[in-house]
Image 1 (tube, rainbow, N blue to C red):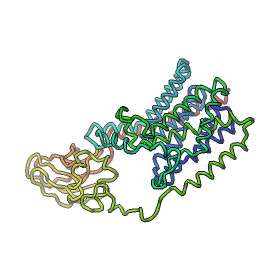
Image 2: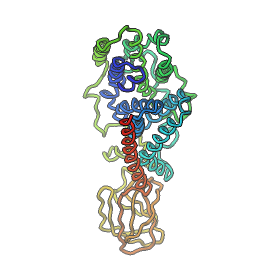
Image 3: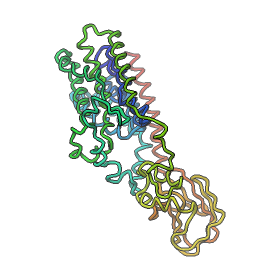
Image 4: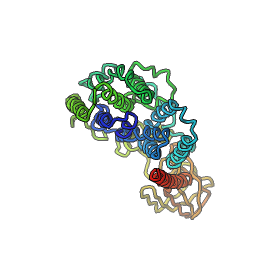
Length: 445
């Protein structure tokens, strides 16, 4: 964040202030210390890297490979933040569309995109394989993309200005930030022309994301894919980012001979206010509940069911989700659901299973004690056999009439998953090579 703001403002002291405000943003601290939303608060690291990378590509800087680190880290960290960062990042590119006419810029952008896609292969292709192999809850309409959830969790506008004592979360910007943003009217007139376009983009994006978190924004008419945000106040991640830049540039513009001392004074004021906000956080041991008392998947009261229904059960196959009671109460062994079979010497150890199987009918269907996901390797007397999803959302196989056959099961990952890992490894090495080449060019300059 410091490096990015230093480049777009050409001011070290503004950059110090910006990085500090970003770290100390109340919503960031809420994410970190109250919600403990690990994926979301780690995404704060990568968002500045993405924009710094885009800036370096547009400026034909040899540090453009930072875009690869930012994008890859963000996708592996938080998919929702990745989607929204891609939207705002694309907007930032469009703002500078004239620079995309330069062949060197296009070349750098193309290389970065190619290496990003290669590194992300180990995530993208197994995800697509899972989506195509069965119906999983996460891909179903109204599971993650829920209009009702988005509309319900919009913030009242007053929570942007004053924290509510009964909510436990702090969403407000803080008066120090609001005052600094108010100086934007003066700053726009004094900024140098080469900085004005970027500044206006960050100011507009900050105001837009702030409104998007509140009841003022018309979420009900937005495209369904944007509903993946689930809680509109999540968008405050970007408000923190954009406003930390704008507020700092404002101070550099309106305070004559803005110095490090000025930055430190503002940082101290912000810190004192943030410490005071701790009083609005409600957190006590009485509010912590054992997992057995959680409402998720609470059908039988059995501990293992809580694993079956973890979260909203969104990563279960749809059939498994509909049969959670069955899965939670079924015996943890192979079951013959069509035809007759004798199962002997069954040994299950995690994702590995071995048993002697005798089937008395052709096309006997066995349901294995695993929820259906691609990547299980099933061997019958050393020969591979295909699996399928049963009506209960479990892993199933069809067997011919056999006597005393050895059935072996292990999870090894699908061929697509294994191949995509190799592509990702090549992408990592390609990035290292690209970094070395760029470093040599910089030394020659």
